[in-house]
Image (cartoon, rainbow, N blue to C red; front, side):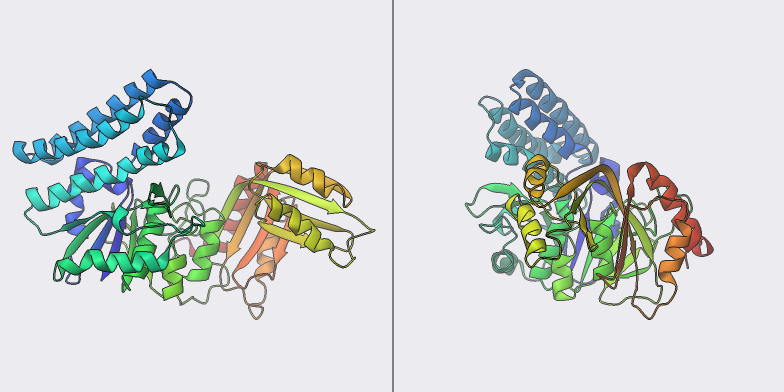
Length: 444
């Protein structure tokens, strides 16, 4: 069994959907996980926002625009009138669900119902195309029948495995299954989701539940690059990464991969391959338990950080001081990204400033507090074991002209993290590319 996930760009038009069958062929059974068509989730988010703001007329108008777009795609993709008419009936039913929600004040559960329609629509269209237009065998598996969150809003792995097996059992021998990414039910049985980017997470959860031999994440870029191609010229795809290395890069800003997506795959040792629908012959990136010899493989950057320094010569070395500091963030459910200490101060960063004012008020009871906003963590990932001499020197030599706010090295064998002001981000990434990767600018 293989699990193949295709993102919004890969199913973003009738033309792109027609290209998918060539990518999903194989001798082993496959589960294909689809995102919503590109632009759909943003449109649905906007419709829900308008409804929350009481802009019912505008929400209805935007829903009709989206419906018309889908009607055009359906007629372009499903060229047989009878097949198109049947699909359009189902499309209209989905949009009727949204229109009905515009008649009353929108609740949080209603918003989640709206957001779920994108994946339901993309899988409907592709399944009809694959089975009715191409005459191929495929089973449409509703993700809402087996994807579920527990009472802590975390994926319920045992439930998913049990109910996925039940959904697959009546179809023994079928070569292909099509299902939705992103959407699920919560512990109460209501429609919910795995948050933005959650289709990657869906694929990993489904792969783990099905004991798949491989999970493929198909996007519009040929693997995970060694640096941000939007900022730096001459980047190249990394051929191999360990799960730990990929997790670090995803968390610290690599946009191709959802931060949570590889955790179920890593837990079960299932390789994850990142591939490009626009260039399917490219080898992409393989994420597995293996790692290469390169000391530093890639750089990623995470914006929107707030740096906080707590200085207290009286309490810092006292027993329980750090625990007291961490408990403040625990009370406000605010994760800490990075931390460094000295004899007189503790510096740390957060990426969620929702409760910043309350946190600072409590921290001031421990000593003086300084706050720096508009900070960026630059994360360097690779096989950074202590025996690999010189890695840190290369990094800091490359950044010799960049003001550094914090440095974290040694907490992980796969990561050096450096905090800088966001205004220096582009210069820092370019300097690291020249200092670390220029000699490898041509991919092997």
